[in-house]
Amino acid sequence: MRHYPTLLNAIFIGDRVLDIGHALGCYPRALIGGQVPLTDKDFPFIRHLECILCVMGPKRALLMKAYETMGIERVVVEHSDCTPDPASIADELRASGLTVDVVDFTQGMGRAFEDAGRIFGRPDEAARAARRHERDMEAMQRPVAPLGRRVVTLLGLTNPQRNEHYLLLETPGGHLDTRILTPLGCENAGALLMDMAEEVVMEGIQRVSSPDRLDRLDEAAPDAIVLTGDPLVGLMALQEAVTRKPSLARSVPALAAHAVYALPHCCSALPASLPRIWTEWRNALSPQAAPCTQRQQ
Image 1: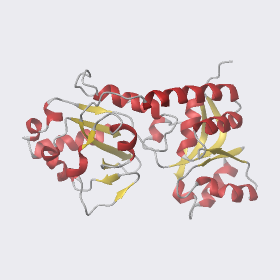
Image 2: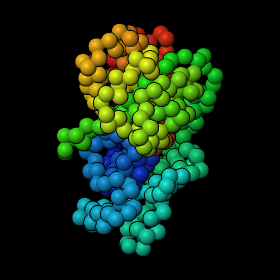
Image 3: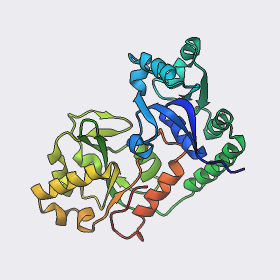
């Protein structure tokens, strides 16, 4: 039986729950997340309550109030290796009278799909999705010819309520390198753009608080620039850098070849989506790919 997208009368706590729910076509009325950029744009029908750290800290009352005022039937919580683990408050929520289900991501994606299928009432579809995910992950492990690209990746974040924009840099050694760049035989060329005075947070991501840091793109010499999150933030930063230093348009291989790509953000909070993300990055960075600005999906 084919299932169509369903809006559940639930609150999801954890981006991984939303990711696996998306794979099964099941969405919450409200979300407590924070690790994945642009979920408010990708899922505008979901009410975004607060970040996980806030709700697990001083703003627990916000969750309780939303549960009551929205008439929520259940809370679906992520159990992961993150610190703090959202599932650590499951018993507390149950003791407060909330109906709570847990999706366990610590035992592999097979277990996570099994839990999600049971909770969402789609066990057969979840079993098929689990088999497909396992097959796709195995395909990712097969040796590929090294692409040999030098890549700078910029993450753009937007706060529409405050009309604020933030630019971040994917630094070497982070999750992106582990899952995408290194397996594809690419080098993260962002080291020369780092500022040792800035903290590296969120799986190897560093805030670019000073716009003139991109003036050093000629030293990094990437032959591909990838924009994740809100690509407009990265495009504007590149435009401003070239305006300040016009020689970048010729001296930076990626800019000279127009090899600028808008691709999906890669982070550990998107385990169900990883094969699709990996494929899009591989296709864009492959030598046969036409150098152009690609649309993010």
